[in-house]
Structure formats: structure tokens, C-alpha cells
Amino acid sequence: MTRAVVVTGAGGVGKTTVSAALGVSAARAGQRTLVLTVDPARRLTTALGIAITNDPQPHPDEPNLWAAMLDAESSWQEVVRRHADPDVAERLVDNEFFAAATSHFPASQSYAAAEEAATYLDARAWDLIIVDTPPAAGGIDFFRAPAQMTDLVGGRLLRWLTGARLPGRRFIFNRTAKPMLRLADQVLGSHLLERIAEFFMDLRTTYDGVSKRARQIERYMRKATTLIVTTTDPAPLQEAVKFFKALPEVASPPAGVIFNRSLPVGWIGAEAGDNDPVLVNNLERWGAEAHRQRVARREMGERHDTPIATIAWQPQPPTDLDSLEALIRGAESLPKLW
Image (cartoon, rainbow, N blue to C red; front, side, top):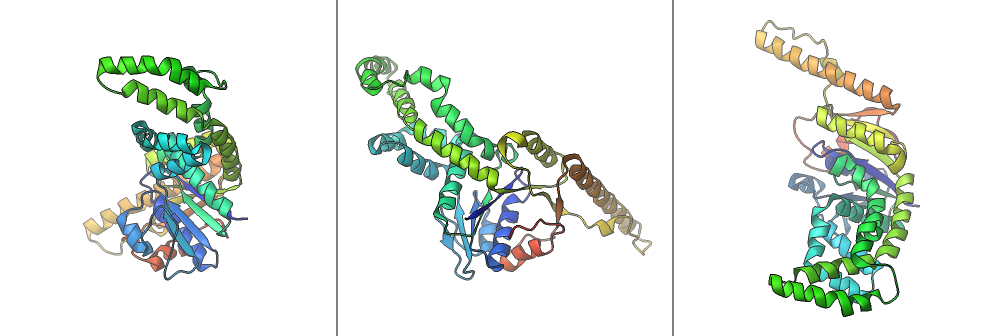
């Protein structure tokens, strides 16, 4: 069985960097590891030393490491081709509303990412797959997306727009509704209404496949090891707390919360050993911040009864595989993942 580690959290907390660092560490520990990431920053791509594309790419210098980028539009093309008849799938992909629906709605992006991850889990080509989730809603949307997409393609609104699930409804649509929409479009001077109706009608045909796949994805996600990455800044902390509130319905209990960019506790109460007032003042302020961070971590662990790990603040971001691995090697209380 391929194991999955899902790294979630708010945007801007270093979640993608932590995911890559975990991948490098796992690969060097002998695990055949695939890192699935979302739009990695250029400096992270440089640090990994590999061109990250939509297809898993092996690292030339790390025989156990692969990386791929989760691309919502490309993933959704695969989704519709998997769950719709070939002619319907191509019509959906060519519809201008397809790109809008797959690029601009967080739930559709998260579902595409989840289905892509499930596809690689099915392949069983790796020992470990590390998923860097899209940051929408602090990562919660990634877990909710399968149910949300099932509701979308089979929900009341789409049923109202496309009619009952009766044999021949495409024929009825072509003979009745479509001519009226075409007439309305002539008045409007465009093909807008007809194209919208076509899109919804074709999307509806994916319901059986999407709903079945969604249930399988949910099973995968409940078996996955979940890590929440955050900092002690108020906004990311609030997103982490939201995850715990939504937890019972979306995922298994997290293996731990990783506080990234943590200041050393040794700075708390440290003395400058110098009478320079500027140095003394700076050390007091940094010591006070380190104390605040320690209190926030302790409160999070106690309130949610969850293990707390820390990754130290770095003066420079990782620039290569060794510095990525060093992030994990220097982490404190990180749960054992492999």
C-alpha cells in the first residue's frame, strides 16, 4: 500500500516548503516518495533541483524522489475524460465555461487535486505520497471537495437546470430547449445561453463517475496522515483552529501541528551581556516574541489534545536538497512518518 501524508494549512506559512522538505527526508530514508505540490515558488523549484511539471518527474540525483505539480485545469480534463463518454468529454473541455469553472472555484481546484492524488495512490508506484494541499480555507476545502463536487453535479440546482434523469433527456433538450435558447441567443447576439446549457447538460453526465470516485477519495483521505502547518501569527492560527472544528466530518485526527518559523526558546529571558541599550532592547523584544510563540503552541496542543512540532526560523530560505533536509532534521517533536 502507498501511504499518503497530507500537508495542510493556510497560505503563506511555508506549507509547500515543509512538504518538499519532508519529501527529501523520506527519499533519503529509503522511501520511494512523490511530492505533489501546488504552484511551487521558483526558489523552491530551484532548491529541489528539478523542473516540476504536471507529470511526476524523477530527480536526477535522488533515486527515490519524484515531484509533480497539481494543475486544476489539466486534472479536470482527465476527470471528465474518465467519467464521461468521449464525445461528451471533448465537448466539455472545449466549452469556454469549463476553463472558468475549473480555474476560479476553490472547490473544483481542491477536487482536482484530490482526484490527482488518488490516481497516484491507485498506481502504487511509490511508498509515500506527500500532498501539499491548495490553501483555500486553510486546506479544509481539499477534504470537503469530493462531497461538494458530488453535490454540484448531482444537486438540486443542476437537476433543475437540466431536467430529470430520464432516458433520452439529451434528445428532449435538443428538440425543445435548444431551439428556444438559440432563438434567445440570436436576440442577444451571442451563443451564450446555448453554450451555458450545453455545459450544464454535459456536466450532469459525469455524476455517476464523480460520486463513486468521490467516495473512494474520501476513504483515502481518512486513512492518510494529516499534518497542519501554521505559524503563531493570528490569521494562520485561526485557520488551523477552523480545521479542528471541521475535523469530524472531513478527516482523521491530525498526526500533529507543525509550527513553522519558530523562534528559539533560548531567547526567552536571555541576557545580552552588554550595556548597549539597542542590543538589550532588541533582545528583550525578541525574547518576548519567543515567549508568546511558546504560549501559543502550548495552548494549541492543550486545547486540541494534539502533538506539537516546531521548525526553527531560518535566516535564509532553503536553497538546495541538503538545506531542505536540514529543516526536518532540525525539527523538534516531529511525528514519525516513515
